[in-house]
Amino acid sequence: ETGVTQSPTHLIKTRGQQVTLRCSSQSGHNTVSWYQQALGQGPQFIFQYYREEENGRGNFPPRFSGLQFPNYSSELNVNALELDDSALYLCASSRTSGNSYEQYFGPGTRLTVT
Amino acid sequence: GEDVEQSLFLSVREGDSSVINCTYTDSSSTYLYWYKQEPGAGLQLLTYIFSNMDMKQDQRLTVLLNKKDKHLSLRIADTQTGDSAIYFCAEPTQGFQKLVFGTGTRLLVSP
Image (cartoon, rainbow over all chains, first blue to last red; front, side):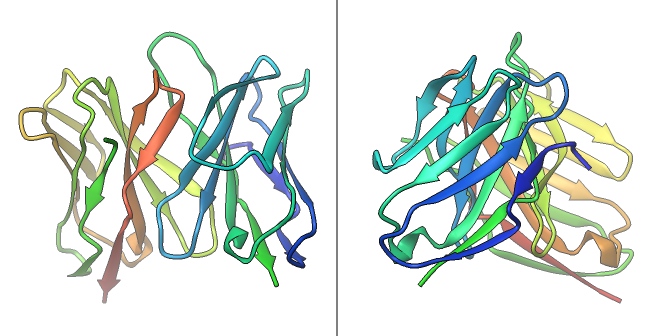
């Protein structure tokens, strides 16, 4: 196990609603990245947080937003949910230092939008 | 652009060797990664290789890197049924902020 935890495990929401997903990073890690994994696909980078600020963003609309807290845990918020937002949401923690960029993933939150 | 490509499916018998291939695009990548995903689970970091290495061995795993052709492979020796999973290669881009993943190779190991 990596020490990265995510909650909740599963979630069912209706189109148009809002959702908040949570992630606790591994001890000693200061960076959290969020990925969306649609069924049958590889994970797609949403954004990354470092020192409580967004530190890079993928090709996702502004209704995907996030936060990082002083203890390095993080939230992913999605507003105005669409059916295509149904996916496994993965959080990964890492320690930004030197050239090493090993990211350790949590078990994910399975979001279903109906 | 960023694109990591993998074959979709590989089937082997228990005890055989498995070779999973990947091509990537960013020649400036310092590290390249292999992740394993079991059904319903998150991604497990299996191994990684520095871009200045040609080969890395880690117990049953051997990673080969051909920088000229931007080709990466993962060899699993003595493949076991517990190795059945989806394997992703990934390269970092945007100054290491972001991992770009391939579509994954589903490995099926039969007894």
